[in-house]
Image (cartoon, rainbow, N blue to C red; front, top):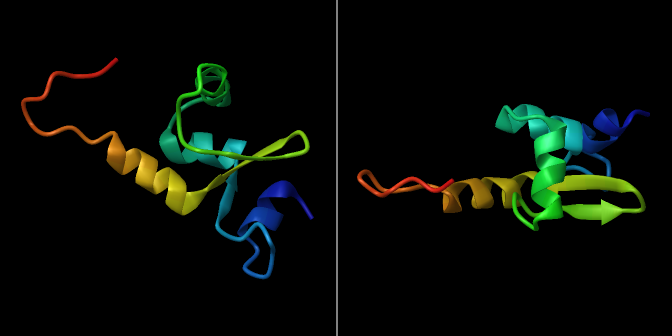
Length: 77
């Protein structure tokens, strides 16, 4: 079973988790960007199992909501 299939299988321990490739696709960014964020301890929270990195979908959604800015707020870079 592929990582993606394992992560999306409802009977799997990894149900509710996204692979690095899936997270990058969901955010519309490259896997390289996710890796750069990890290097500076930024980005959505992640779970590391061996050499594989997973993102819990609900934790990533919380992280995304925390990045929301009110209208008129200066942008963060």
